[in-house]
Amino acid sequence: MDARLQQYDDKMKKTVDFLISDYATIRAGRANPHVLDKIRVDYYGTPTPIQQVGNVTVPDPRVIQIAPWEKSLLKAIEKAILTSELGINPSNDGNVIRLVFPELTEERRKDLAKEIKKKAEEGKVAVRNIRRDGNDAFKKLSKEDVSEDEIKQLCDQLQKKTDNYIKEIDKLMEEKSKEIMTV
Image 1 (cartoon, rainbow, N blue to C red):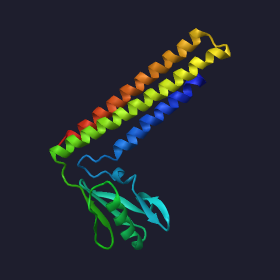
Image 2: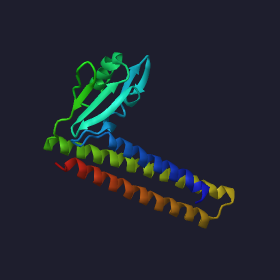
Image 3: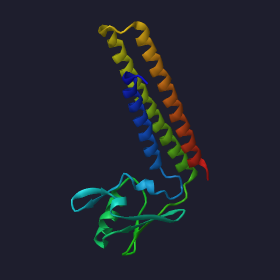
Image 4: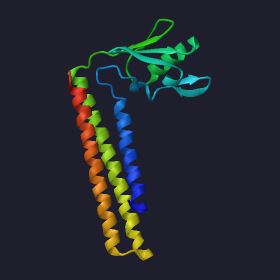
């Protein structure tokens, strides 16, 4: 692949990867430890991911259990979960914290499906912006003795990459929406 094209391909791939990690944090009625990925705990003054301060397990399809390495972290973990956008109240028994995920209502499923669609649209816009930046950069190459045919070829290849990433985003959105709407 042309080096001039590679940088835009990399940026588009990062956009899709970000969307995948974002979708992993959306819960679908089942307990998924990835919903904790964005939550940070104050660990001796440093914001630290929950997975790095304790053992995160899923003992039950709708329960996540967090066993901190140090008991003194129970309150900090509980506080981090309460202040997050997770919307679940943790239960603390003095040793572990349990998060019980309720069944999703039909209305909540529809709201999540809308959120999934919105995130996909944002991803598509980001990919199209990268394409625009690439096309602008390629058009400036005419000042550097690059033929118009070569510039057109670069723009066409970038468009094909854009189309492929847009299809991938649509597929991801479809899969996640289906997962959410499945009772």
